[in-house]
Length: 253
Image (cartoon, rainbow, N blue to C red; front, side, top):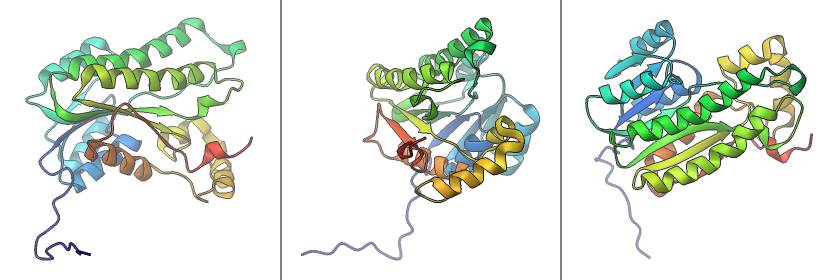
């Protein structure tokens, strides 16, 4: 048997060395943590976010190639952002947007229509406007969720999006090949967004998950970011939906 060893005198090449990664929603939470890990892996960053102040704070920390403050759900702004990119990029990750939980009894139809349409339009818009900017073999990476796979009161819009995004991802992977397209489906992740949604129920939710999840801890932004970087680096992966929920779906309600 032949044993292959690496030369200890040769430093390991970072997985993302000399690659450019665009993170839309990169000023907080999962997007910001992914940007940190991309940089640690040798990648260059382009950061976009809706909040100029938070985006500037992220830029002060990470010193990206460039930043852009705009609302990613605005079609004209999204198109202009990709048109203004100075050169080709290797990966685009989109974490912009937040889930909405409303029971039918309290639902505003126009708001629900807007939310559903904007989320799908954002995914399609990124695919459409980035296709001439992303290098062959590069990645479009979107964020979805797992919670909507089980029906429940208040889950109508979320469930519909949870079902739609994997199908959209698979089709885009065929249409955009050899650009790769993947979806991360996250359960509860301990982010500022989760804190804003749960309010004073946050600590109780954390304790519940620590006690019940098979991993016995709460999933954090660094966990999701590590998966995102892996999906960028592994060029055999496309068209897939990758769950990260600490085993939450294995539990009975």
